[in-house]
Length: 388
Image 1 (cartoon, rainbow, N blue to C red):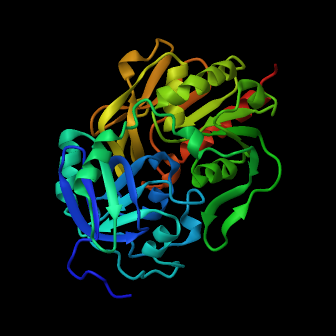
Image 2: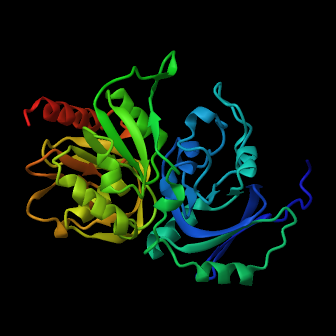
Image 3: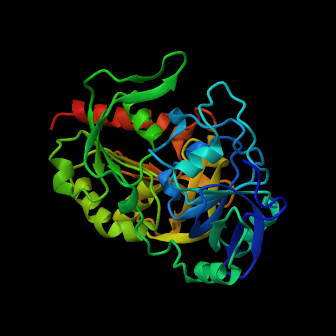
């Protein structure tokens, strides 16, 4: 279909400070308001767009080649895109990959998500770094008609992610079993055989590959909604509890999640948390969380294990962080970011309870951090073998 307005911008990004960016729209014809972040990953745009941790955000991709490998359902981290939209340097090209089963613009359009190309993403990224993650309005109109004053007003009216509980909007509606394991050549994703230690995974916005890693570590996984109570969780008679990644302000989600976790901790069950799960676990242990200037979003973040000296290359996606200065005496800081020294991991000193800020299932290293799932499974095994 020919461009009805050749040479005319068909997408507009309005920042709350009045700055405007124009480009070529693709995907859905729509408007949205969100927080703007940038992601430095060179691959995985489909996984990023379907990561529930990006709820309420528009993602600027610093890598220019976005869309060139197409779309394949195997790469979805959840059923549909969760990020509100995407900003890219170059317009998506026709896919060139043997796994491709569709085009990025078509995929976004079918799922109501906006894309915008032709943007100076370096300038936009610098703006995010300098002023913090801005509130924005993003619009795509094939005719190129934009009420920029209204867009700026919408961006200014957006309340932001601080104080927002977004986990309830991305969690599962009811409990379910998970038995799909990690992808492996040539079989792809295979099903785990029945049996193994029972793990309840609390879904604050869980990525599928995290659940696959738990299954591949031998766990019999039952996924439960974010609002599950301690009674709901313990009724499953679990051998361990996993706290998933997710979006929004951990303190807001913690209003109902923290009491549940605190009750579970009284049972001495092994507990493992990732991302939002890490932050909420820290809150349950008595620490605080704070909003970051522009967060960590990318697949090249070096993290140091303070107990072994090992450095892991990790994938991250978070706009809040645990304030390490507020960790109580019985909690050890296990990992820190080598970019800015922020907290990236904790553990209880006397029990198998631990968590990390980054996403060990994303394999940026590529296998630097998979040991965490094995550590969790081993902690469960040790407890099961210990006489009551």
